[in-house]
Length: 134
Image (cartoon, rainbow, N blue to C red; front, side, top):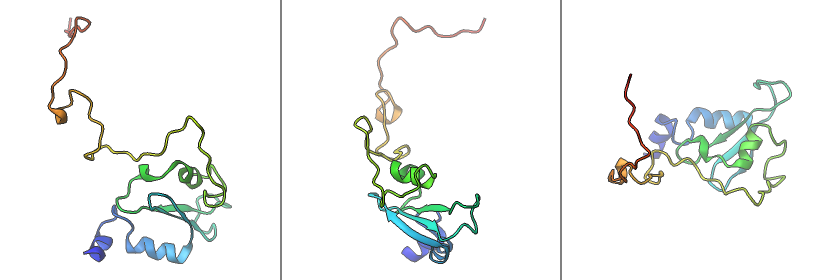
């Protein structure tokens, strides 16, 4: 089943075409704590900007851009020249650890009064006035 999933689902990991292109044109740079693998082109032949090598990520599991951590995002977008494997990214004291986007999952935030939490909410207080057209 894994081979069929790889062939027919582009959103779950990488397709055979991406694996071939990565093998032929890419150079492995590193892996993050979520298991995503990061690559850089060997030259700038297929780059959008001459002098810059293309960079890409192959996600572990479901392809979701919010699964890219801050340090690797900076490297992918050329904010940092060196990848976090060579020059570690230092978190400031006020920065929170990375969390992927959980919208649409069972772990998504559901405020009090949300339909998925039963839909019960407090009654509106006196500061609410319904809009009526004039």
